[in-house]
Length: 215
Ligand SMILES: [Zn+2]
Image (cartoon, rainbow, N blue to C red):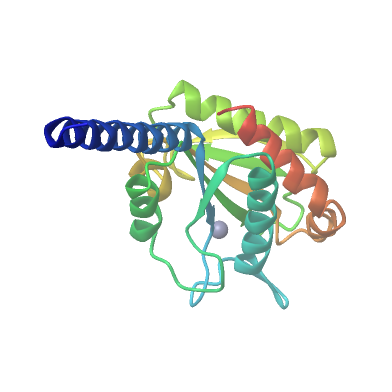
């Protein structure tokens, strides 16, 4: 083989190798981006306790449930991003900015409710004031699954902000993807707290199922 042919062969082999590596990277990135990314938002945290009932703090219940739902989603092959994974203070803006930056497929905020009337009980979900169909479907799917386990009253899907349908919860209006905010029973209602503890695993599974039905 003369020197020229040798060089041509080496260059061709190098080029083919580069194309193969490039195609591999492309396919890996493509298939990775096809896996849904769910942004889970444990309400409150750090300095912001959320609702309080005796020594029970809303922020703790929210985090525990959020991490449990995330674990199930990961087992089911979803990618998950958390706005907080511990008891840290996170602003509302930081929450939806993270979701948008990561290009999440959907955003689910997990909270617990509170009312002066201690008999108020049950679950509800909030979606943004424009009532997008995918957001409504997401909220309804989750509530339906939770209702199957049983959680006091199913208070249904509410629109906007408590007391004003034209306003929004910041995490709903700030996120670019479909979103909803869940209120998992009332911290101010003893039976809802008992239900939350007793059925904890079943609720986590139900929320994960409702999310997966909406991907
Ligand atoms: Zn809350």
